[in-house]
Image (cartoon, rainbow, N blue to C red):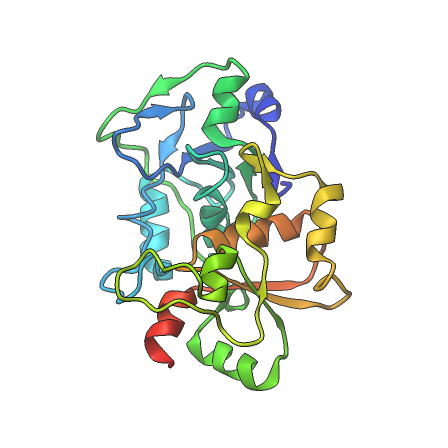
Length: 263
């Protein structure tokens, strides 16, 4: 599947029995869903339990079990959307790459684009039980970097490090949203705010995205994406997938972890 999918494609293929639609919205009070979608509870079911940092990716066995509960098969074709256009859905896309399932795509524009197109909306029902799927997680460590990897980057700079936070937070002129967390940036980092790859809730065209990545686009490139806590880094990563190929990963602890362990 392509990294992103249009609402028109989804409308035409929505009855494909192999297709699984995942709603990655994070506001429990917003119960609108695309018909047939299954709620992918990123905050509660797909984060590492007892992690000291927000949004830490789950262990493979946890991810596998929760996907099976949603009725996901190893052969499933997965479409992910969220309620903000493009926000949490790229994170879910990355999680599936990390767990070895590549037949997955993000709905460009999400639920707002679906509604704007005039397509049918349903209301999520609580406590739906799906027939258990046979999904298997096959962890791909190349998709993630940890604190020690970033320490080595500071010394050796063997890959490009991209920060998706706002320029104010990156430059240290705007406060971090987490109380008590200092502002600033990891040394030797390029700032590409995630908002610069989006336009009206969708990804910009390839022609508009290409100049944003000109500093890091080259054959055999290695790129790591970071942000505040691992969410918006995935937006930039997915945007880069539309423009160039290369070895890519997310620093999952991101600025939250780095700021707490460095001065």
